[in-house]
Length: 197
Ligand SMILES: Nc1nc2c(c(=O)[nH]1)N[C@H]1C(S)=C(S)[C@@H](COP(=O)(O)O)O[C@H]1N2
Ligand SMILES: [Mo]
Image (cartoon, rainbow, N blue to C red; front, side, top):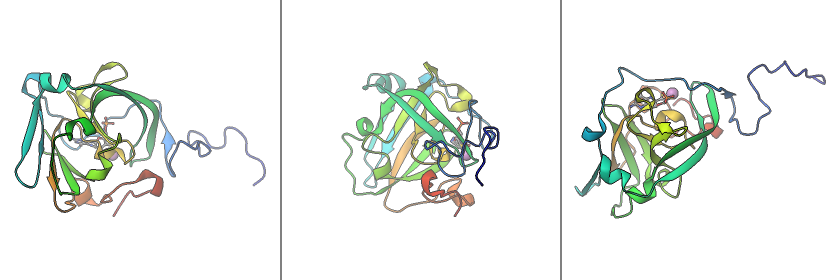
């Protein structure tokens, strides 16, 4: 094929190096939720981390807001093939939240209000790779997108970014979460197209 007209690729801008294989760019922000969206008031929200030894840390909304806040600009990639480039978020780095925790666990299960779970290796949550985000595009995160707050792990497919996040459990083994038990890949690297198991 020598001749490519500009309309040929349609919205599948396959030439964009920011797009992982098989993804197309969207300007909209689709909502994807398995089941009903829970309603959690900020006053009732907390975020916990538990370890394999039973250590537990938890932050109320006000305690969470008193932690250092950072702005994040990142691309997000949904396994259903849409990618949204250059999204902006504000939240707390998981490096901050894990600061005092002592663990020998290498894996985590994130728990959401409403029962959703997803597993991510601990190393993928640290070193500036993951946040608990509560603002999107300069506005409080909408409930449909996980407000009051959601996990943001943008280097993995977006199902790992648990909405209505409640806490993270450190686990000795890699335990499949909701989608990982329903045919999705255990790890979910969009650049390797790790969509399904
Ligand atoms: N609690 C919870 N988190 C979730 C989901 C869900 O159903 N429940 N869906 C996941 C999936 S499959 C995707 S693609 C993204 C979608 O986020 P969005 O609705 O903000 O686009 O949230 C992820 N986090
Ligand atoms: Mo998804």
